[in-house]
Image (cartoon, rainbow, N blue to C red; front, side, top):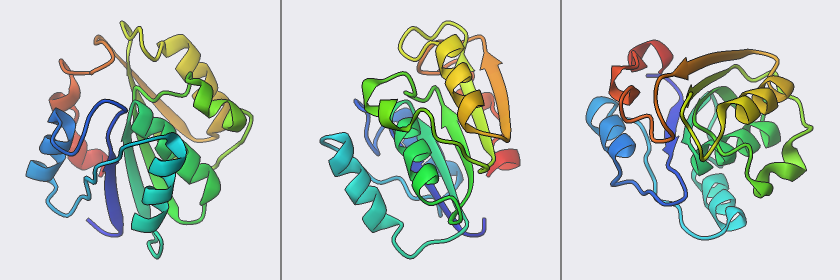
Length: 157
């Protein structure tokens, strides 16, 4: 891997969650920090972690996907690509950003049975924001637990 790769977990998860553990085991250079608190507190910590980085690949799950999207909108020249896993683009915290546009390449994985981040709403929002969007609608729920490890991650990272 070149550049900086970072996994941003969801609101109720941590660096000890299933997805973070998978990335630690399979991509040892990938950063998997813990985030707690409000969106502002989490974004401040993310800014500190990535302060001098370039060629960043952000992998964000749920609330981490919301964070990754905001970071990419704020720092488009530093972000190489986004990989969003059922991102919380339907959460109220994202409303200030929902009319922004981005040329950062984005891959979206979302479950067709997701009731937390409904795929129709999230995909519509993502299509409005990202000019380069690759959508993968999976037979899964919000956790993507049936499909997550089957994704060919080396093709994306």
